[in-house]
Image (cartoon, rainbow, N blue to C red; front, side, top):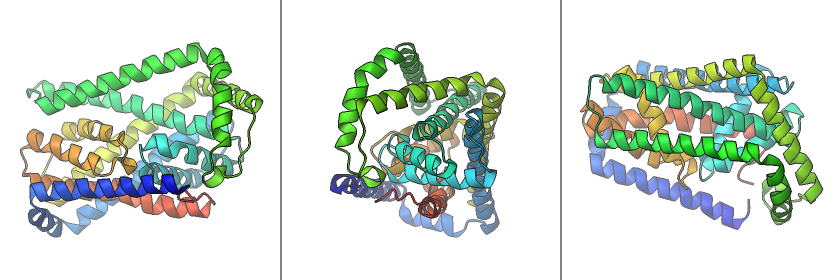
Length: 340
């Protein structure tokens, strides 16, 4: 990682820190500290436990996707690889967009397969997570709206999901339909751009336009293989959905730890909606996601803002910081230094 990249990461964490400090000041930091101090330690452990099983479920999604390309990896290995993937996403700006190239390299190194297969596998997991989250959001919001009038914040968040889904579907359709022309058009610029990249594992990278064309053709070929294995695709989607449900369970446990109950249906749709804030130039959406959770949950639940913030911070320790710690160790053990 060159000087500019390091500055971007440092500035990202600094910006996230400022957002969190501002949030704590707005909701009364002393009340937040009091709520966390009174939290039930058993339920705090339960929150972490749900987060660990969530990681395991999404690691299973990655393992299943790899299996569609005849790449075999054990569940423990896939768990460590996926933890490292979450770490990469959480410490680089723009979340998945910044961490996926590193994750693809990690998958390639660990499984001994080509880089483009690693990229297809982790990109497929991301797409499946988006698809499953959209289904959960619309179902849960529909159930919630049947008894409660939707507020302005929730309407705006659901609208954002609709826009995002439409954009993803249109983009994927256009790219897939015109993939041959796309390869011919962008292979040269990509090869030239990569020759100027001097970051981490790509420091000594040298590629030609023909190599890029070959890699992109294999990439699209692997996408087709994944898409046509319906049995494994259904299993991967099931595991992805289970991951969202486990995150919701972790949020419910975090609220229970600080002495409050939240309707299950609220937890189900708030988590994917709040994670939209991850598409910011902040590491893993840190700061923005916390603020989004509080902004959505306070008007929906009517719980005091300081208590909501305390529960959200507990939840984010389990969902954000715990994978960062595990994944950082895993990435280092596998020889991929994200911060190099």
